[in-house]
Length: 66
Image (cartoon, rainbow, N blue to C red; front, side, top):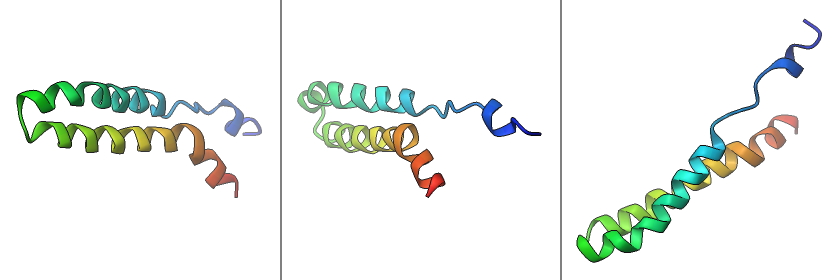
């Protein structure tokens, strides 16, 4: 198929992961006042999920082209 790559969906869910990571980072300070263990876990999870989403959204296609 000539246009197989052109017609392929490029939606990887990266934007949703970025939003989820930002939401976790936004809610982490409220959780640290209630429970001591949930605050740092929310910070780490938010950074990790946001990083994965950022990679999927902006850098994955550059790595494939190189």
